[in-house]
Image (cartoon, rainbow, N blue to C red):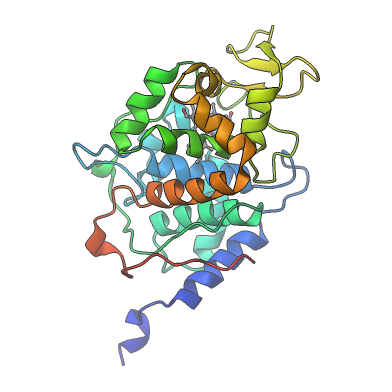
Length: 284
Ligand code: CCH
């Protein structure tokens, strides 16, 4: 009868989606050979619009699908990740976009060697009316006060901010997306605490170029830091946390997993989740 269409999906069903996302991440000739960084950035930008006062934004409705939010300056280039996710959606049409994109973030972290991120399904596809106004995501040209304003609005604290920023171990800036250029680390497809180590222990100088103000490492001139990254060591409250994570990768992994697991649930009413406790998905 009508049973098959409404059968509840199990953890195994979602594990199949996880595996399919993982399988296609390696892409020769694209950036550093993997879609993982841009897929992680999609999960973060789809969640980081949350405002705890109005309880708007967050990952629930996947509103970046719509032209207005998809066109926000901060989301430039994320079409690459959304297009990749569309190929997964074709294989598993029953999954919501919010679940798919946040699961993508989990896959990106775990498959590049990062910690296990708690995740559970339950997000629903929203409508254009659920889109958030432009300006909710951080502006890389600014400093510590701006980062605090943005992340406190989501409900995070200073420790969460520093932990989440360690995601810049992965990926790079693109001149045709944000305008910034280059990777933060020498291993941009491997999740590690090296962002903190380089930020703290390399010598950094302003890059002399026509693009937006960014730092380059004095020694190789091949790495970059954003003004917001540098604020993590010029701010007296952020800096000791950077020092801790530079020394202790385990502490970073633990705190990142918790903060990122929280971030990808922002904006989702708790009664919508299909399980009481988040799951640990198996690394492929
Ligand atoms: Fe980020 N990020 N991010 N970021 N980000 C960029 C790229 C990545 C800021 C600005 C930028 C987080 C926090 C911040 C990733 C994950 C996270 C770029 C370059 C800018 C600019 C985009 C481009 O040109 O393609 C700012 C500002 C903040 C906070 O203040 C957080 C939090 C996360 C995840 C937890 C990842 C991954 C990338 C690499 C994307 C890629 O395509 O390689």
